[in-house]
Length: 340
Ligand SMILES: [Zn+2]
Image (cartoon, rainbow, N blue to C red; front, side, top):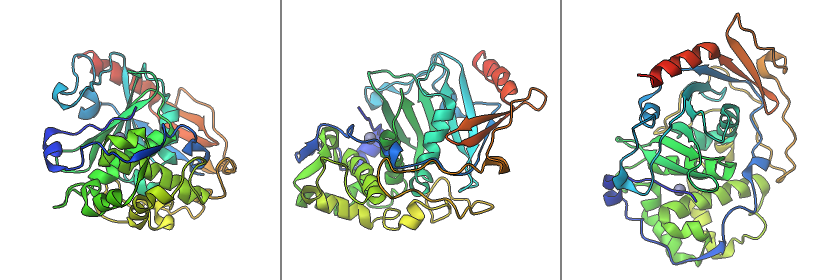
């Protein structure tokens, strides 16, 4: 189940929280996995441990849970939490990932899936916080910040690429509150829903916001594979697909799947990379056809062994190297943070 957390203020502002009566095409989106269409970027990832947990991560450490008046959702980490600052070569603004030690997803898997999110969507990401599953299967929540945009995405359990794309779409949706509210509250989206007869799946029926994110998952698949996943048909939801297809960043694959996060305003991550990597390309030849990208991490493509003297650890990550610095120091810092 995917959940979207809305503050009461947002609930008042957004007019899109009523259930949709359009017929679902499928029970869920579990028949395909965007991981097969979204290869990891063919370059190194630079990750540095943070000495202090960011406030949004510290807020879910013991004895603290999120307010109970905003849904049946609470998040807490009763184990150690680690925080990583991750810089990808398509953006100079680092991403922050916090992981509770009992989370199902390992830190390298979190970095890997974040990196696979197309930069045109990833640039809207808030802090990613990985926690243990609270219900069978993965679930996730994206919260909006006080001044607009996504403040954090919580992942419970092993969040698939479909879930990541869904949540990053919420982040995009929240990015430009403006006078019309979120993108999914725009009249154009309402008109598209009124003109169509179906939605992707039963979860899409939750409301126009969730449908917006589910249609985005299908559209990303279509852009990468040339058509919808098997079992999904365009006709009964063509207006929804057309609306998203005309939106930035979906309307320009060279930006959505590009190598540069500095492609417009209103995003959390928009600082241009020092060096553009011209090889940054997503495979579009069909699901399952994506070859392993050539590794050019750190110049050699091979991971160096971990050394205790430099306190630097290189982890192999999907054919690339993940550089983790000061990892030994991290353990002590986080422990002291939690022992306060
Ligand atoms: Zn959602």
